[in-house]
Length: 99
Image 1 (tube, helix red, strand yellow):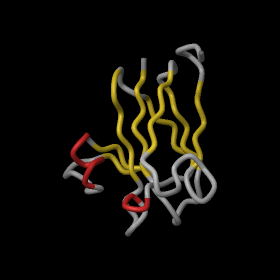
Image 2 (cartoon, one colour):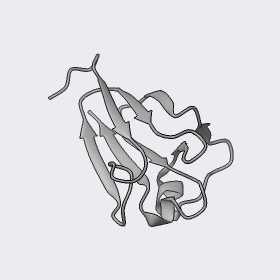
Image 3 (cartoon, one colour):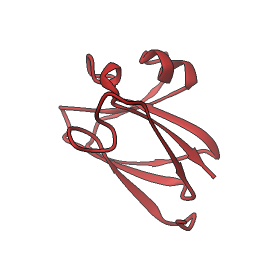
Image 4 (spheres, one colour):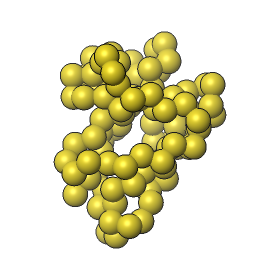
């Protein structure tokens, strides 16, 4: 199990954790996640459970676009999607439970 001060790196895009037809779930002991992806081809949007389920970006949602986004997780469930057209609907989303 990772220590709380460690950083977990997740990729976004083809052949990575956030790609494919299935919904993804992950449990981490760390509270820091680094999303690495091609800026301009994808993004990472922190959403609530409703936004995750519907693939809709709620008003005021934080949108990360740098391709190298370090995000501090809150304890419990954290939800992220790519809101580029069709990406979330194709399975590019993840729910992370931070212990």
